[in-house]
Amino acid sequence: MTGSKPKIDVVKSLSFGEKIKEGLAKTSATLNTPVGELFSGSPSAESGPSWSERLKVGLAKTNATLNTPVSELFSRSKIDASLYEELEATLLMADCGVDATTWLLDELKTRVKRDGIENPALLRAVLSELLTTLLLPIEKPLEITAHRPFIIMLAGINGAGKTTSIGKLARHFQQQGLSVLLAAGDTFRAAAKEQLMVWGERNGITVIAQDSGDSAAVIFDAIAAARARKIDIVLADTAGRLPTQLHLMEEIAKVRRVIQKAEASGPHEVILVLDANIGQNAIAQVKAFDKAIGVTGLIVTKLDGTAKGGVLAAIARQCAKPVRYIGVGEGIADLQPFRAAEFVAAIFPPEPS
Image (cartoon, rainbow, N blue to C red; front, side, top):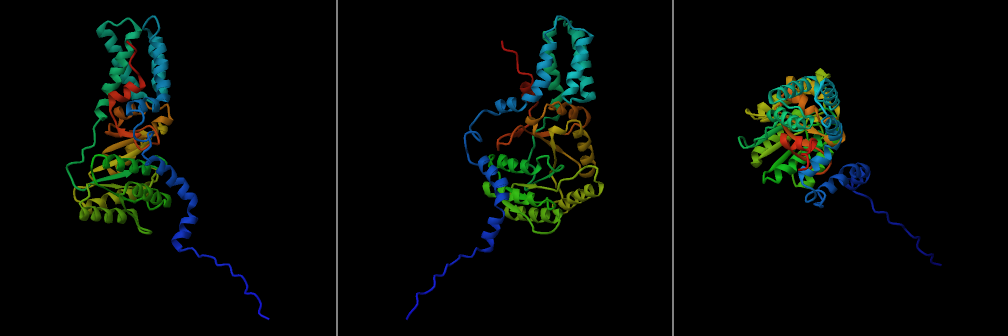
């Protein structure tokens, strides 16, 4: 008697690559999905509200801290000491800092006396003008035409938005018709490399990375690759550092020296990424990183999440580094060059005529 053949279930074995993909599903959901939405070309990302409209919305908290109290102050019947005292408190609450606040008040008082201003309502326009004057020296667009490849080294503490800013900058430069290469120099944080790889994949940009090795070695290789491929811009990520960690700050200084060995004229720009939520602590960060690596420009992120937009005034008075870009949201187009008049108009919208 012939028995029936036993049924055999054939189980398809997964390749190692498929296993990795399956194992990293949660990481993919954290990184790839949000990034994919940014690059989806949806109206909200590319063709939605204008930058000035998004800036106004993004600075709503700073507007509420500055514009609303100021408008109430300037609706009073007379200009007196109490008005100046309350204006001083308002500016300090927005993290303008003591130095910038003192300068603004002194200049405002001088204008009141010089022009014989008696109506507080007229002070609004004067304050807007003075704030614009204060911020204009740090409005210096980044010039990238002098070198090829143009090497931009980015630094900042963990959580400031450094790696995300690199992805947005890459898209910004691509839209100008420039070729970009990314160097995954944050070798201390595994997710940083993965995040950059996703940005690169979505933008069709090469990412130079290593499974092991230090940050300087990765960036050295990236510069060599960019030179061979005639790439316009290299965006070099570095590991997050607290300015109080002196031994780690020395490591990032080493990265700068290695870049100079790879490209004698480089780095051509050293950008410090600052989280606007830290307020006055930004000043200490700028000074510490500047001492270690010679900061030439700033990116100020997350202005939409804070009422401390006045920190730009503090930067202008205490450590006047050019603010190259500001960020007011998560969208790909929510990182744009800093323009003083535009920034002030978003905080102090013109009075309706």
